[in-house]
Length: 286
Ligand code: FAD
Image (cartoon, rainbow, N blue to C red):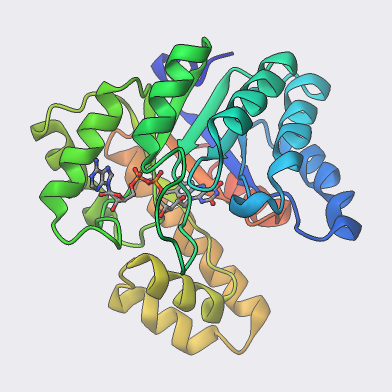
């Protein structure tokens, strides 16, 4: 099923993200993760794509397992910054052959010594190719706090509008820890004439040190309320996990209370975390 159809229903759509582990030895466990997330009755599962080829082949394999073993819509991520047109064409054929209809089209993070010259410069180039080459439902990434490389938020929104006009059916946000940032972004997106669903990406923080680093890299702000929690509980993993789950749950309740009809959980391959959030929301999602 196409994700655009799921998002159009008069019902809350819940999705989870997983990533294929980099080490071959850990790969087998990803299928257990999928099995456990599948039991949570989420509406679709997305699978990240390792830029640089590290886990790129595995994305199709895991997405196929979700789609064909569990008959659950899979969203396969696909990055382009280090791929040739031929490689992308090959990947699209693989996805089609496995019955995968949904792609999150991304540029990917450029390597430090990037000097340009690849087949793809921005995600929009990939979106155009996917649109031409197959009948896929296409999603893209967006950044409520602006993408780190873009100096001006207005430019970022302008580029986002171009991505959507090139054929995007929906957008998924970078994590954020203050819902007002998302609501403000929705206003700016609408003002720019972007009318596709913008799925909020919620990150349950269970390791505060790791998240501080990834927020620094992605330019995601940590609000004082969140910082106080992280400072207090970061050295007690069970307490941090409980607080992180409560924080993510509250964010989702606020989104639903304000009429948002979809949310995406960055599970970090921890189905137990997603399970606790879903349990906290059991009556709310009914
Ligand atoms: P783009 O949309 O191409 O934008 C990149 C930058 O270029 C932005 O600053 C934008 O403003 C600017 N820009 C866009 N168009 C133009 C233009 N025409 N001229 C000048 N500047 C322009 N990474 C992975 O490697 N694998 C994954 O599976 C993955 N999944 C993700 C899922 C989500 C929901 C999100 C939010 C991010 C994900 N990422 C993933 C990270 C992503 O690849 C990086 O954030 C990357 O730096 C940008 O990708 P993009 O598709 O947003 O790029």
